[in-house]
Image 1 (tube, rainbow, N blue to C red):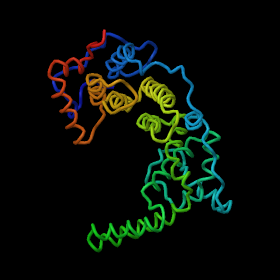
Image 2 (cartoon, one colour):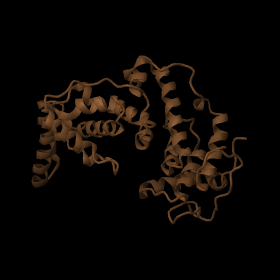
Image 3 (cartoon, rainbow, N blue to C red):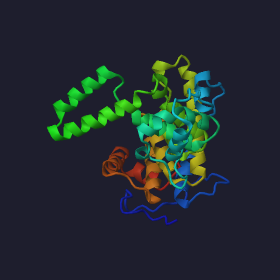
Image 4 (cartoon, rainbow, N blue to C red):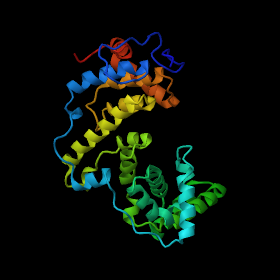
Length: 310
C-alpha cells in the first residue's frame, strides 16, 4: 500500500518515518507502524489499557455475551422466513441502515433475536439497525400528536405533509415493539461486536455504560474498557484502516476507552489519512485545530511517529 499522504492528509511536507517501537508478529501495512509504536508506549503508562481483574456485572456480561431472547411475534412462519431473508441479505455486502424496513423488521424481531443468540452475526447487525430505525419514532399516540404539531409548525405545508406521513408510518410499525425491545440497541451492538463485526466493534467502543441506569457502573466501566480495547487492538492487528480512526477517537478527551492524549489522537488520525482514509470537510477542519492546539513541534513529532512516552 502506498505510504505517501493523499491530498487531504495533513500536515503536508512530513513523510512517515519508522516508529522506534513495533508490535511483534503483526502483519500490518507500513502506514500503521507509527500508530502501533505509539500505542505500545502509551499503554505502558495508561492504567485504562490494563485488563481489568474485576468481573463484569451480570448485566454487562449478558450484553456482551448472550442477550435475552424476545418472544416470537405472531407473524406466520412463511411471512417470517421471507422477512428474515430480506433483512439478512445475501451476505455479499454489508447491511446498511436504509436496508432495514421497520414494517418488515418489527414482526421478525423475535426470530432475529433467536438467530443472534445462536451466533448469527447478520441477525445481530439487523437487530441493531432495526432498533436504531425505530428510536426516533413517537412512543405513543400523545407523542405522535405532539410530533405532528411540531412538524407542521416548523416545515412548509407540502414538505410537512410528506414528513407527517413518514412519521405516522414509522409510528405504526415501531409501536409493536415493547419498551425493552426499543431499548435494546446497545445489547445488539455488543452482540454483533462479540461475533466479530468490525463496524459493531467500533460502535461498541463509543457506547460506554450509562451511569444513570446501572448499579455496577465502575465494574461495568472496567469491563467495557477491557473489551473495547481488545476489539480495537484486534482490528488494528488485522490491518483494518478504520481501526486507526477509531483509536484516534479513543484518545479524545470525551472518550471513556483510553486516557486522553492529544498527541496520540493526532498521530492515529494522521496515520489514517496517510493510508488513504478520508474525512468529511468538517472533520478535516478539526484536524487543523489539532495542529494549532499541539503546535508545530508536537504536530511534527506525532506525524513522524517519534516516541513521546519513553
